[in-house]
Length: 247
Image 1 (cartoon, rainbow, N blue to C red):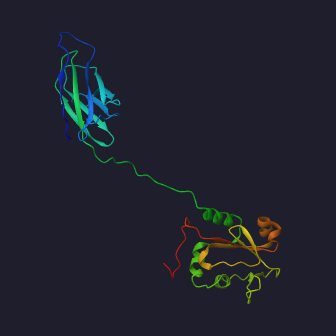
Image 2 (image 1 turned 30 degrees about the horizontal axis):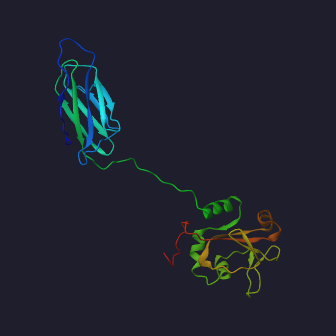
Image 3 (image 1 turned 135 degrees about the horizontal axis):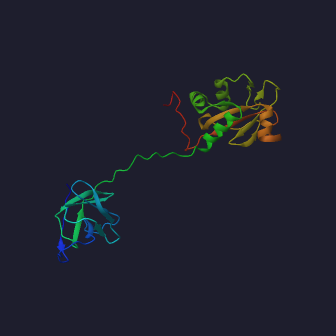
């Protein structure tokens, strides 16, 4: 049982006969700071646990409980989040008795239910989901992660990924071509159309996708008429996997 200081002062007189209620009132305070505690629930029960009345403390810590039964032992239960429950026994009082209490409660750590925090998908996660939905040839972050650290440049990364629909250049000045139409593909970085070539480090790539001519025209219009390589760079918000060489 927690520490409970009770100062009981009999305010009224004991009268013969029957009255409508017995009043229990008082103040709830912190046992450490002695500051009033609001929103504490004060419940009066008999010895069998039957609730006979209840009340809630206000901003000054004051409460009042009207007990609809007299002549019985009362048990006063005081509860508040952040404090251990206080309990006290009150002797049977006569009709119309009014009793004042000062109740001191001990502070404790409040335990709450587990909270699950979820975040919205990052922009790149949304882009990745959309690329799959559109049916593009997607190289997911996990696949890119297994190849990017082995490649010194973007062409070497594509060569390591091994897409047979691409004709990779042998010279720096050449473009990447599609085997289907032998036309230069357009490089697009984070939805910005760059042209037939662009400088991009493999280590900066989160995922990439190969678009055929029809998909490319739908997505980027006349700026990418023969197909495109859509590259999305890594962001600090991305949960990208590590490569085997760099776990």
